[in-house]
Amino acid sequence: MKAARNGQPFLTDVEELRDRARASIDKGAVTPNYQGDVKQTIEILQSVLATEIVCVLRYTMNAVAATGISSDSVKEEFDEHAREEQEHARKVAERINQLGGTPNFNPEGLATRSASQYVEGGNLVEMIKENLIAERIACEHYRELIRYFADKDPTTRVMMEGILVNEEEHANDMHDLLVSHQGTPPLERK
Ligand SMILES: [Fe+2]
Ligand SMILES: [Fe+2]
Image 1 (spheres, rainbow, N blue to C red):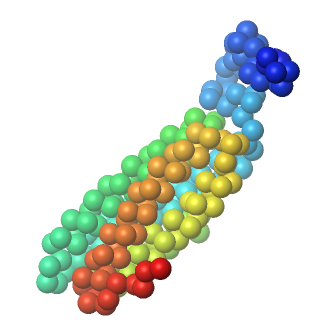
Image 2 (image 1 turned 135 degrees about the vertical axis):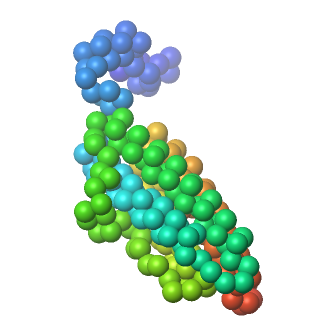
């Protein structure tokens, strides 16, 4: 650590940074000042990856199977969400790889690694409801992870924040669809 003007430890000397980077190039993006627990981060991200894959599967299945009056716009929404979940899965997999792990795409055990469940829903309203539940689980889970990563791993945190923004939109979309297809009044707002 180098002393800053006010005597507080501040930025690491550039020379030292370069030397350290050179000495451990095999570690890829994980440098010595990574404050998180790499193994644990990878483990957490494997579960996020599984959650995203399950979402891709559920939305894709729903987009194909949705029937009934005005199902076209709902199908489109399901399709769009499936695409976005796929992007999330890709981002998370890339991050696992950056941290030196191997992203787990193995279908075996996928449902148990995932935070959200794969529930098909027998009709349009049930599908929308199940998706809303899954999105709310993802939002809650990701919010917790963001708090966990905090400054320990800002890159993973920022990635999760971006994904969370998207999941909140998804939850909102599903809520809007539920209201218009079920005819229930909007939830009480505080
Ligand atoms: Fe997602
Ligand atoms: Fe989502």
